[in-house]
Length: 119
Image (cartoon, rainbow, N blue to C red; front, side, top):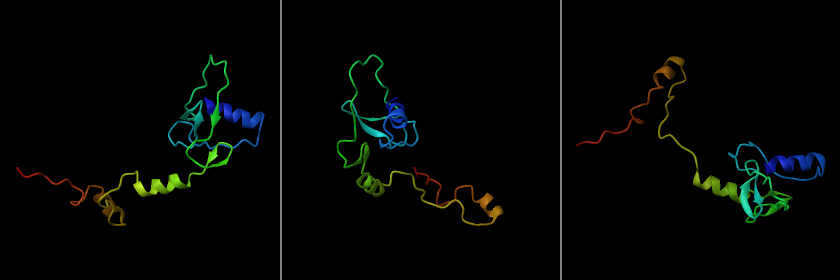
């Protein structure tokens, strides 16, 4: 994977190389970069085995570069906050702090139950 190659370069050749990484499983997207002209996640992008040409690795083209392969994520996080890409509950399941009441309240309250359609 390209991320492994970047880590090897950072460890053995150029310790000043900067790039982001986190999960190494293709979930978080922090290792996004332009690899051979396409936007990829470096942690899941394989290095071509029979490639005799050099691969080209660059920061994302549509973002401001802070250093090497690190881009400014401020605009991304502002947009992320606006769209709220996560699930939200319409009601509280735990309404009481006591353990006995908490056990009872694990069942959805009447506000959480789906309304039955009348025929």
